[in-house]
Length: 183
Length: 183
DNA sequence: GTATAGCACGAACGTTCGTGCGTTACGCTG
DNA sequence: CAGCGTAACGCACGAACGTTCGTGCTATAC
Image (cartoon, rainbow over all chains, first blue to last red; front, side, top):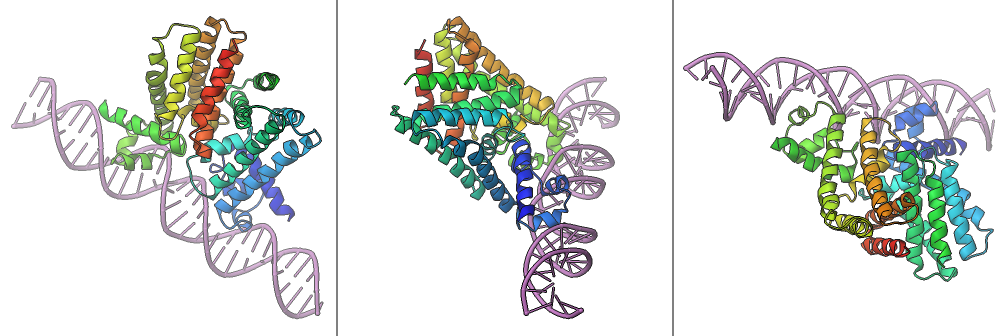
């Protein structure tokens, strides 16, 4: 279904700037030169659109960060590659509104339901993968390492988006290097 | 003005969970057993209400974190005290929806205007104060230190709110201690 | 005792939201 | 060529949004 995919591309872009709730079916339809009802028929409810959007964002993240890193050997090399690719991913603006997950997490962390569960699932998968590689690298307390690396990413995204300082990404690289060189 | 202050107390609480935009005048009025119009008259526009709410949240942050830390001597002791108090502030749920600033920053980072400017001002003041104490402590690259400590706070907040894991705060304390003990 | 000022109220406005319903245009298969 | 399923459409709805208006209290000032 090419139309549906095109919708979700735009939807993920828009959601990264306006939020998953602030994203409106009407505005999304206008942006795609479609009618509200025509677009709506693809999903049946706004929640289904949100869920599909989260899934589309996950696919984009996998394609841009997870998969390219599989070439690196497990353990420290792949962990470093993940971090590099993640920072690059933000810097090259894979989403126009910065990291989709950072925005979605902040928006839905107090809103129970399937959408929040989907977001949590994505974040947990990312954290789990970071921890797995930290473990393979023989680092002590791999969950703690994953938490710290993830936090640096969140910080870089906010620093860039809110303060408008592009040095955010170099700050993140510096912090990541220090954290991983300690081992 | 007692009514206005009571409104802003609730408004800051609600905004920390629903967001500054998701907070609606009607729901806020209902929560306060007031009429929409009666509440509205205090501010004149939703944007003014949002600005006043940001200011109220800032006052709460100053009272809970900044001021109590002034007892500690400048430099490393006060820097540590800031971090302690900030993590405690989140852990004891000074706002029911977690860190107000983390939520507000993520929500408005792509929405230019006075509200975003106010939020950025608050965050910059906090980052600046962290950097000032890092500088006084003689740490190298004090802005980098401030960035990393701030990112750890963002991470702890998201970890707690989205994943529901109360260990977030101990993870943050561990990360902060490691970062500051390196010096 | 009467005028004045400050709050709060209910009702209504125009807009936008998500969501249904009925219809039309198009591409496939018999 | 006829029939059918899918996709997109226009239109309308009820609810909620921010905002405005006119009115009624209550208490202070003269």
